[in-house]
Length: 399
Image 1 (tube, rainbow, N blue to C red):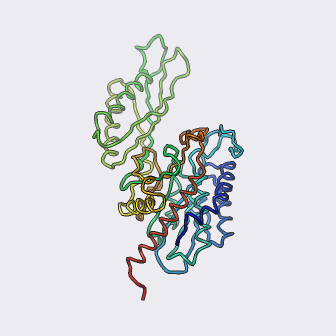
Image 2: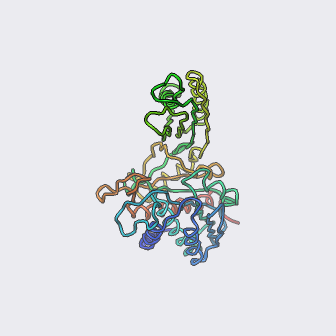
Image 3: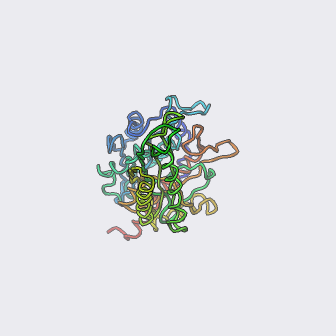
C-alpha cells in the first residue's frame, strides 16, 4: 500500500475532532461505556466487523483484505485518569475530577484513522488487521489480559502499539529491542506498634519511628543490594499514621512501588524487602506485614520487530527522526500482548515547548501536540503493511 502518510493526512481533521470529543468526555478505567460505544459506532459506519464487550468494555474491529495473508493486531488504550483537568482549552474535560492525562484519547483517535484507512482500501491489504481498543490500561490488573483471554489475539501473527510521549519532541519516534518499559508492582506495609502518650514514649512502640527506619532501610535495596548496572526503583508513595500531636500512633501504613526490567532483579528486591521488614520488626518490637502485589510485567520488544521499526521509521520519517528509546520506568500492560505474539511497542514524540506543551504525563495540565496523532497513525499503519508484505514475499509466489 503506497501513500499511507498522504492518505492519513486527509483524515487529520477527523483525528483532531475525535480526540477532542474524547478529551471532553473522559471515562475512568472499567467505566469506558460511552467511549467504547463511540468507537464501535465509527467502525460500523466504515463496514468493519466489530466485537464489543471484549474483556470488559474492549472493542475489537477486524478488517479483512481481499488477498490472503497474515493477521496483524494494532492496539490503542481508551481509559482516563482520576485527575481534575486544569487546562483552559475549549476541549478541556467536562467531567469533574476525570481527564485524559496520558494521551489515550489520542491513541484511540489515531487508531480510528488507521481503521478507516484500511477499511477504505481493503483491496490493497495483503492480509487482515485486528484493531484492539482496550479499556483499563491505567490500573492493574488492566484490560489487556482479559481481552486476550476472550480471543483478541486469536489468529494474530504480530502486534504493534504506540504511546504518545511528551518528554520526546513532536516529529520524533523511538523504540528499542528487548526491554523498553518496566515491570510495575505495588506494595503495602502495615506496621503495628503500641500506641500511647507522646510524653511517655518509653511505654510505647512508635509505629512512625519504625516506619522511618524501615523507609531508610528499603532505600538501600537499590543502592546496595542490586546490580548497579541493572535499573530498578523502590519508591514509597504515601505514609499514613497518627491523629494528634501528643499521641504516639499505634499503626502506620506505607504504600509504594517497585520498578524493574529483569525477573531475577525483581525477585531479589522482593526477598530483600521481606528480610528488612522482618529484621526491623524484631529490632523494634513491632509487627510488620508486607503485602506485595505484582503488576504488569516489563514490556519486552521482539528483536526482529524492533529492527522492523527502525527500518520502517527511517523510511517514513527519516533516519534522523527515529532513535533508540531509553529505558522508561513507567509500566504498560501491552507487555501481555508481547508475551503471546511477536511485536513492538513504540513511542511517538508529542511535546512542543514552543507551543507550551510541556506538562508531564498524569499532570492536571497535560496536553499533546496533536500532529503526533498523524505520526502515530502513520507508524502503526506502515508497520502493519510492512509486516504483511514482508511475510508474503518470504513465503514466495502463490501457486
